[in-house]
Image: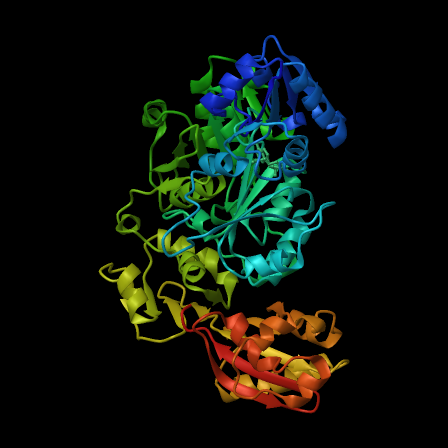
Length: 598
Ligand code: SAH
């Protein structure tokens, strides 16, 4: 008598995220060989009569032996894999061996962790205009990754990227994504143990995600999602720019709310959300009833006796500049009603639901900064700020959001904070901006005046007189250089070319060269000094590009027909054109391509 072998995808962890077919196979199983710590043991309870074997402790051969002998003695064998077996399931070796032995088997698919993560993030991985492709991949570990699938190469597509097995080396991963051309403000999220009770979500941008993941203590069992599909309408996203080259800034957005904040909650779920919010703000305490005293570490947690919420709220009203209330708005309204006095002195009050979907600016929106506090809270939870003050409600587009969406770089990011605050406070701005963008976001709102149709955006605050500059990143600089060429010589020629075209360094999105220049110190130093991302292309990629000035010498010497022109065109992407053909100085060649579809 012979048995049956069924490979089953267990799903990401939650017991009800297995398929009905997979569950039925478990129900009937005599032997279950399950894959280690990411399979929920509760699922195994289904297999009441089965022998259970954890394959984490077995070699491939031992797993196969168990399966085969089970099969031969008539057992119904389930080989239970996390997520879906087809993704990093190491099933191919098992299939091959069973095929060789002529043993039949079935495969039941499962919900891969990528889909559990997307569900938890509430994100569509394929969004019109942002990305219509999803790349499932991993960073190199013990298992090598083919060179053509290197992170840099895949990142260059700009498609949504989902990375398994890669959270252990976040910093290196971010470097490689950046080297592939993704800007520092590209949104990124990490979901640890998606669908498990101890799931954690960390959201950020490439500039800060590694630090946030380290802070959260996540080292494994997490899925990373990178891409603009993670942008959320309405949430005021912060543009991380050059300031991040010098270090990690708390991205909680508390900079937008200057003051002490008390974050209150009344339920266990609310308390967890309150802890998440408080952790993202610069100066915040969690305020909870005594029964939740164990939920958060002491210095940031203040407890009051159970049942004394009214008293605690009244104390908080006087003590804090802002109150974030993770609870139903009705509770908050009743308590605020008893205490509120004057616009100038009442604290900011923000109400947030326990899931973090909404942060409602309830009281003191402008003067007290509740609008800014709501935006900060929404940024932390990944939810939406709900702003009801008149000017803000016209659908304001924050300037940093504008820059991030349309590929501009903020030349003076230190102004962003006050500009956002002023915008939320209803101040007026004069904008010199491409007319199409003005019409899309600012026309019809008296807060904004059109000051001219210009490619570079300059925004003048009529309140402070300061001018914020957003410079389009629209060019790729292709560089060829001899071995040992100095950063100064590359700089001199590049500066001359930019000057001739009347361009500033901010307009350069990327510097590109040939793969074999990856370690060239002068080139690296040059890109570093201007803080511009570098990309490298292989000889076969470069040789596939049609260029006006191929060089016979380079072909003979390097096997490459053109470095500067081809690299510039490749880095600028499809639809780009050369605006400066190869220009040579002593040991450097430079070409400039314009991104036309950006
Ligand atoms: N076959 C599995 C992947 C196995 S490889 C699937 O389809 O999901 C193991 C990796 O999967 C982990 O390092 C992690 O990156 C990811 N992973 C598995 N379960 C996860 C979960 N519940 N939450 C987040 N990531 C998970």
